[in-house]
Image 1 (tube, rainbow, N blue to C red):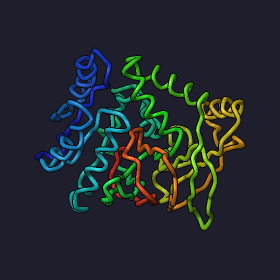
Image 2: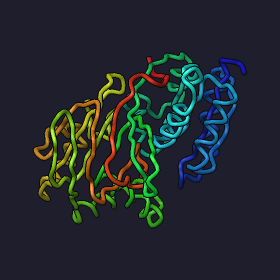
Image 3: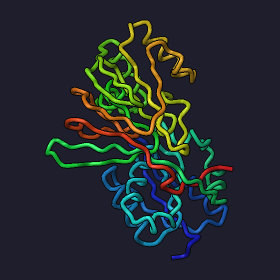
Image 4: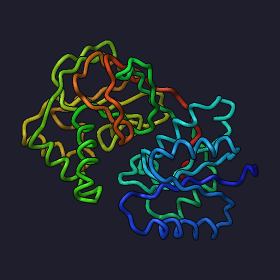
Length: 308
């Protein structure tokens, strides 16, 4: 395999009719810059890991995901299953094509495909950290999953779940997200949790927790994926009007200023108890862990292609 040839995984957005046109626009930018590449297209979210693994095993040194946070998460987890000698030879690139694209926005990738392709072509590599959750599933089997952006526990994960359900009604990710947030505001719920962080035990009812390796959809705005640390925000149950002010602070990038938000920075979080609290990883729900689980960080483990 030519080391300069890109392997591209195109993940079309659900609900978008002009899926082919989206790829054709990107294809024009690639051809304009003389990029040599092979493209494979995912049929659904279940096929992403299979196709990424195929690109790795076929020897591509530059693998570009045209997708969102969840697809990028799948790619990172595929890389982590490989031997380090293999993983170190692969650089992972990203063209944003999801709903929120939070990890892409952290680095400054936007809607300009030409600029994004130009940056990836320059092949500026940064070793980045990955967070990791280790837990047991309902069958008692040990599981683990890596994340680039964040893990959500509690209400924010509930919103992800509601968004998936309401999307069948509205047919739009944006409308389903807004409706899910409104439903949660007026039917807010807290969870009995016990956690250990930095020699401190938190034992109380909590609304939501975000563990960020990066910005965490605005909930961990100071987190960076290259300092060997995780940022943690714990939100106690706010009053109704405090919820509205919290949403405004989230939108305006001042989430940590809210009186109900308690921030930490750590290398490890141990969740001893989180009854009935759903868990979302990089925007996608996982099976709710059974019993205690641990969230840690692994420093500088994959190569990511960043802008100038």
